[in-house]
Length: 172
Image (tube, rainbow, N blue to C red; front, side):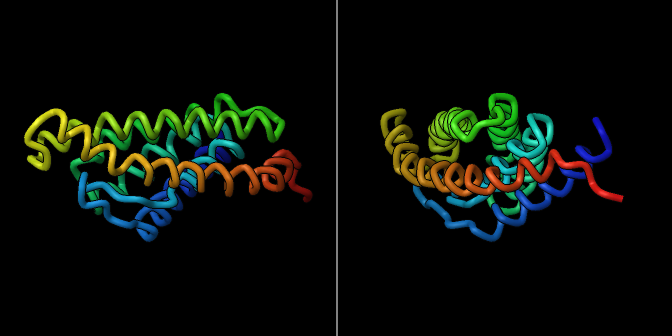
């Protein structure tokens, strides 16, 4: 990993933590929360690629969960890390490819959290039966879709301006 990418991963992991932590809106039905961390994960992945996206998403989001919802931290590390990796790996030079990549990454996140929230609704005693666990996870589904949609819109718009700047060589 190049020093520039390592520095970007550290900066974007920190930004993901801050944005996730300070845009947090709790969702009592699953003990999860809504946040705007996707914006930062997608920008990191679109501007710097899959490894930076993976680290920004996995590390930054998991650290935020350690503070806000520690029961989700391990799942978040995996779900958000893969999300950032997918976006960075699938994105190409066009706006259409970036849009497609963020939609696929976002779909992964929504599905991953639906499964994790179903499991936690049972384990945490929120839901006494599998059917009520699914119902509890379904209450968070629209919030996750809005979270992803906000991330897609902002990140793709920012990437139009930011990605070309990242490709330029710094002048000396």
